[in-house]
Image (cartoon, rainbow, N blue to C red):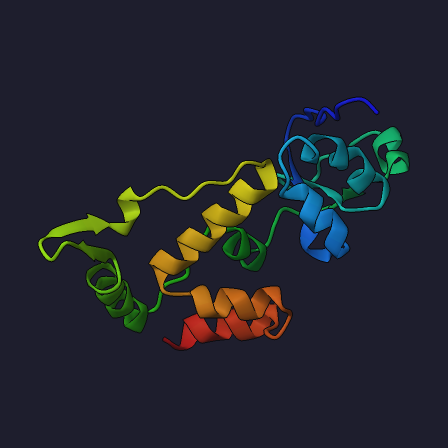
Length: 168
């Protein structure tokens, strides 16, 4: 099996949605070396998505027949919020960000030495792992991590998430 190369299509964003995939595929997506051979299978099973950056963009039919899910509209605010590229902060969230930066960010060693957790690196060895790590860190810093976890588990609908931020 050859290494998979992601097609470069002008005006489209390529995304792989392994959160809907079976457990063994999610495990392989986070395993170095094996992850590069998983993307072709993910596209065939319908976990590869093409998102247009603006309305009205067309792609060829051979991508549809290959198994890509091709969306007709750009990502909504909810989808952008889930991936961590859009911050939805209410007034009460600002206070939570300040307290999160002061609390639980310092590791005391030998009484006097302090390390900031931001300086201790976290590693992700695969493309999917890096995407998940970035989204997790963005939501932790925004104070929306508990909402993010509920939204990933499908406990919250997009309307509930957007109404939460509008009411703040």
